[in-house]
Amino acid sequence: MKINVYLAQIDIKFGKPQDNFSQIESFVKKAAASNADIVVFPEMWNTGYDLTRFSDIADTNGNKTKELLSKLASEYRIAIHGGSVAVNEKGKFYNQSFIYSKEGQLLDSYKKVHLFGLMNEDKFLQAGDKKVYYQINGVPATGVICYDIRFPEWLRTLSLSGSKIIFVPAEWPTPRIMQWRRLLSARAIENQCFVVGVNRVGSDPDNQFGGHSGVYDPLGNEIISLNDQPQGKLVTLDLDQVDKVRGSMPVFADRRPELYN
Image 1 (cartoon, rainbow, N blue to C red):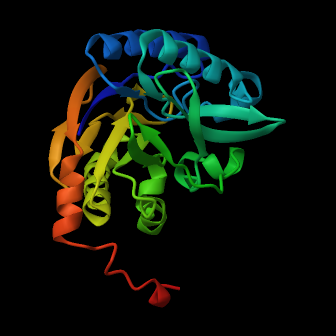
Image 2: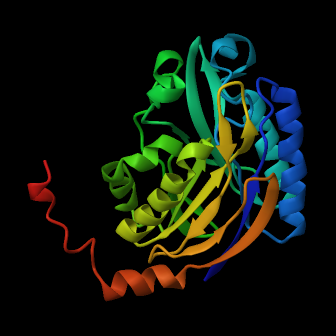
């Protein structure tokens, strides 16, 4: 079985939600025109890390984001992994992903579990505490957000569901872009699955972001890595590779969880 994934590597406009919502619609159209099954966006694409203004610009209960993604998914008959957005829930702020089917139905959502102190997330955001599982065209998948990939125990916990794809939206700064690529590859190797990482490009007042959105196969091979410019790219994943790799080396069956605590 194969699935076409479109990487939407965008330059997020700092603190300008309306401009960013317009970008999303443009990239969904491009992804649909390329016959993608799913389009994937970066982290915090509605506001960027304009943390001090979240009271004014974060999406209340994610309502605007959910309305737009549902509409675009059903209109263009394409699944959407909505990267993540800044959400305001009764004065508490979250970094949250929303995932939609091609029928426009919300499949699941995920609040970032590990908050990144170097970008002050821990000072402004609340951490999530729930797993996420969904199916894209019958393919079991899961997802995390950016800094989460530095915690292999969390991704292993999620992968025990049998997920064949891990989606990773991010705002990963340029100075650590090699770590981004190596961590994505490592998570693919450990969990014997495809890892799809979509990073932003451009800059905000404090950071330059390095792009290099990429896809890694169940052996950790880099199928594609984009550059540091805004762009979209279609990649075809052959999901039979997951079963082949897991069948030849039964890592999950050989675990010793009774020793891990």
